[in-house]
Length: 392
Ligand SMILES: Cc1cc2nc3c(=O)[nH]c(=O)nc-3n(C[C@H](O)[C@H](O)[C@H](O)COP(=O)(O)OP(=O)(O)OC[C@H]3O[C@@H](n4cnc5c(N)ncnc54)[C@H](O)[C@@H]3O)c2cc1C
Image (cartoon, rainbow, N blue to C red; front, side, top):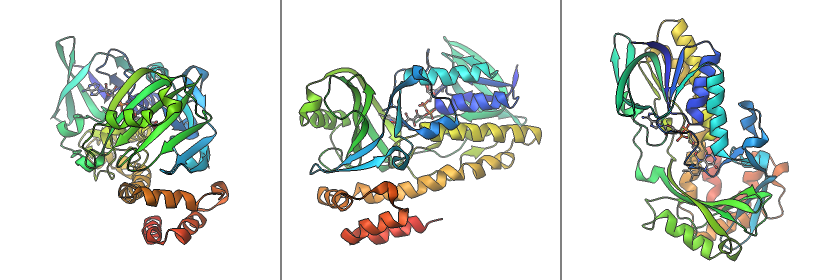
């Protein structure tokens, strides 16, 4: 039975990144993906911040559109404008993920990883300090052995469960999403648009992410703990209420869940690390997970190299990953607290927050300055925001 240094389960951005960096570091790596092709069906609004360039040179072939910033629309129709730098990890580029994900997968192969499509990991067992991974392809079963397994198997991850890492999500920590790709629409397509309010998307927000040529991903996420209606029903209503959208034609539909939980306590067990959506590393307020997943994949690869060199692939030997991933966890912990405030807001409070920032140049403000501006007109939120920002 072959023995790999690293087996990565899942060929999305997090897994492809883990496999690529593992191979670049000289580790004998296998990347398995259960689907017959990577990147489809797309379950994403495809927005990323320019920080993606830390991981890949942005190429026209997987770039749909570059945007200049974000507009956050209040229920009463005002909006707040932010530059792409201030708007976070989902604003800057709109990707063509069908091609982007393939490019990442290709980079893993080019770096030396063995890649297998239509190959599903169905179980893990630890034997004598290594992991036996059961793989199923076209009904055939094969078991491979690996010193380390990286679970990058997305929101429905089973690797965590197999490895004894608790990854269960509470209902309020899941966003249920629906999205249509719509052509021939008439909105300002140089910006990504976010719409907040309890009528539009209870516990979440709606978005319009432009894809160029008058096309856009129009979608929303809602909290199933707050609304009884399906995300698609909310989306249909949002589109019907916006004539500039309802005049277009829907050419693709996307449905999916996004984990929006606080960071998990542990992402490792003996021989196993979790990355990306499998590790719940999505930003809990925006639902963006591409860049965090890629970064975590790199961190896991660096840890794998060290653990293998030290001949210690136990949970203790993988502790470097737990340390490195705190960078993502600390940010997400703050965003999770903001999400808790945000989810409880009524329309009137959304209106008041956005109105208070009208005519304010956010780009020129420090975080403290921004909080002060908000707090002057919204004293009810001042203490909560200050408390969150004080968290180290
Ligand atoms: C509607 C929607 C909109 C979104 N919009 C954005 C956005 O604009 N920006 C952003 O940054 N993020 C967005 N996200 C989140 C983003 O799509 C995910 O965070 C990102 O894809 C996570 O990457 P990943 O590699 O962890 O998981 P995935 O991309 O889900 O990849 C996991 C892979 O593992 C494979 N797999 C699963 N089980 C097995 C198995 N047993 N064996 C082998 N392979 C397996 C799957 O087939 C899949 O290819 C959105 C999500 C949704 C649902």
